[in-house]
Image (cartoon, rainbow, N blue to C red; front, side, top):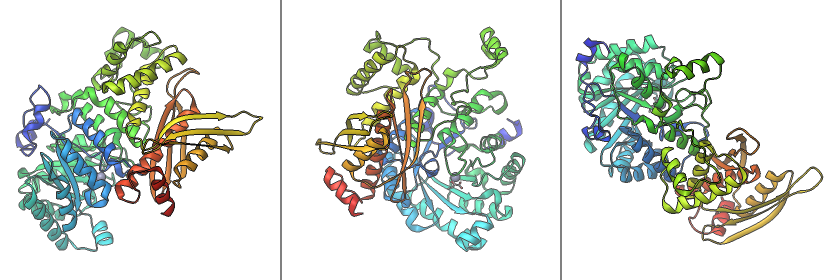
Length: 552
Ligand code: KIV
Ligand code: ZN
């Protein structure tokens, strides 16, 4: 980083000291970039996601292990489910700052505080449109009115907690002198972080750099707050803009795992963190992230949100460390640094030659899972080990990706309201397609039925619908083989819609009909759980759930 800039930067004084306790290596103020993860808020805003509070807690725990400094857990006033998730995470995840989002309304700020007040380190994040196009069309406010709204709501948030962030939404399309005044105003009333949002991913790097420089030079009290950036990826510039901003003195980056978020998504955490680490020589900056946990976190988020990571995705895509051409392979054999700028193990991708199979014991199984970053309870481990043995009977060599799939399946079972107990299908090209299914209901009751369908999957879905009785529409169905070979595990991803919500489900099995049934049960269970949280389905009893769903 520019020496002159480094000296001027007052850093994020407000980044709490406790975050540096995460790793043995001390991160000194000035060279530390605060990683603000908004997977559970902006990431969850991505079209086609909906996570239950319990699933959000699972992700928050993983983000904590990863070492993020701030978790934006949700937008509490937006829905009862969001409120519940933020409150739950605030109570359970104690090391990082837990942040709740609020727009510029007293009720939103109050609700955000209600949700985060139980956190060990609470933050309220207030935002307001800053561009003329948004102010005039959406809020019908002029600059003076906007300044007043921001001043009042930041002061209100400040009356609850010391740690207050303010975001001028659509800052990159705002009138620049007005933006300076807005930032000065909110810092005056106590904003400890100001977050420059490229909400629509509009700004090329040179323009964003000029904006950051301009803010540093023209907002007189800017050194009293931490300068943060929040970049969207509509033009594929989110990571580049975030990095340029920290090079120029910003000390917080807002980002999401796998880059998920509104439209084209947000800056990807794994990209900004690995760029800072790999090019220490350029940036001279560090984060508190334990990069070896990136891959597992990415898998978990992909699993729960249903957003598959594209193979060529930087840092964590399936091909990110694969070398195809002869010349590249030759280089890799001679010296990996010829074509590899990062060690795959540094992001937690296992580079193991150990092959698991029929003869592998429980100890080796546990060890391998630990190397992959999974620690299961004794019960879950025994269950997963039985599933592993079943798989080993069908498949000679079990790859890491099979193991991850198997464990993910195990973890999904933990939150099921209805459990799939048995599936039996009959199919072929000269027969009627039929399915018999047995489920275990919410009170442990056995529920079975049978049906005919146009194919085995259709027949299975018809039976499940008959038993569970919750109307929904299937909008996406994909099958992917996990590894090469005819004996590969098939992973099914589905999306269903019901009552205006979208729910994803995943299932894995060497039998694709069983995988499809598991994926459907997973999606239905998530639908039920989120409607239970919203209060429009009872929490007990299969009949009551079905009756209420029908009445709706
Ligand atoms: O993109 C955006 O402007 C946001 C704000 C709420 C920070 O997500
Ligand atoms: Zn955003």
